[in-house]
Image (cartoon, rainbow, N blue to C red; front, side, top):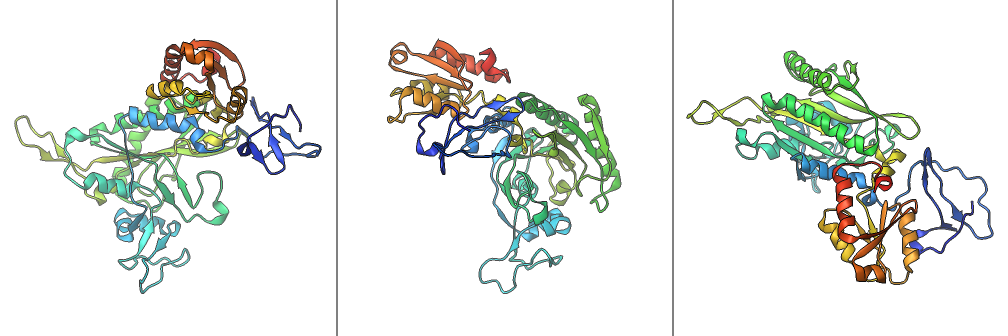
Amino acid sequence: MEHNPLPTSPEDQVPGAVLCRGPSTERGFYHDFFLGKDRCGTLVDLCQGPHLRHTGQIGALKLLTAEYARRGFSEVKTPTLFSTKLWEQSGHWEHYREDMFALQPPGSDRPASSRSDHPTRLPTDTLALKPMNCPAHCLMFAHRPRSWRELPLRLADFGALHRAEASGGLGGLTRLWCFQQDDAHIFCAPDQLEAEIRSCLDFLRSVYAVLGFSFHLALSTRPSGFLGDPCLWDQAEQVLQQALEEFGEPWDLNSGDGAFYGPKIDVHLHDALGRPHQCGTIQLDFQLPLRFDLQFKGSGVLNQPEQERDPVSTINRKKLIGQLIYREKISQAWWCMPVVPATQEAEAQQSLQAAGLASDLDADSGLTLSRKVRRAQLAHYNFQFVVGQKEQSKRTVNIRTRDNRQLGEWDLTEAVQRLVELQNTRVPNAEEVF
């Protein structure tokens, strides 16, 4: 396919071809390649959606981290390796060990177990790569006494996880041996539980609305081989059901599909091909607080010392955006990524960054200004702030959109303020309403 070939820099090239035009369309996208005198023949593109050079260009990831901060979550990092004693204490070793990578330090006498030979207990020097963050976050909560004034304590973690999935089950972005997901735990008092569940559902709807996703919810109840008291399960399931009914969105009952440690709300999305995916989850875990003896000092009686109270309740919410790259609508949400193809002046980028907006500066002195604009369009930046010598002297910017709509010359301060307004109001069609 040949279409208006333009000169490109080395990073724009693939072997034997030069990338040309590649916009997204209503039902996918197309990409043109210039091959000189050669013709490419039949081409089948198996990927729908925009192409990116790196995931740092996905504005949705920045949206998610900003939303976590706005809702009172603290971002934390935990180690990758833990002793299997931790997983025995949490119950994961009994119920999940065949999906974990176990290993031993150098010089250990006994070999590490394999997927086909997992003993119930391992030597004390055996380690395991973490498949989830739950036990580590419990240790963070329990490392010192906690007061009721600190609750709810919300922790978010984007660290790498490892799961020994069967090779036939690998696929996509969520069934891998090593992956990263947005994973969060909320430690709260029992009487805060319903409000936090409602907040999690609101979080989900808020982010998906910006990204243009529709979703469907399901309540997954206790499976066979569950841990804990059936009465606690009944109470937990009632809390989730009540939250779903108040949320107002349609939901289904998925009997027996809960996690072994607690019931959950599953979130189902459809990708660009219409295929369903189970993506985000909101899990209520009442086993870990018992196993790790997670307690807090209650407010007690007026004028009396604080007293020990019941264990905290734990909410685990994760994988909010695991399927985003499968969905072409994600391209509509990159409003927070302007680019500045300036000749020398970086003031525009500094103004954008000072306002909390993500931006890149194209300061390649070997390219003309028009070539920088073209490169920004090929990289799918929503807005390009073009700064030539005239704009430099007047502290203005000429603004273009990804589809080459020219929005005219704007005062720099006013343009930045307008982008901030669009970001704060979460406008999905910012390029059209700017």
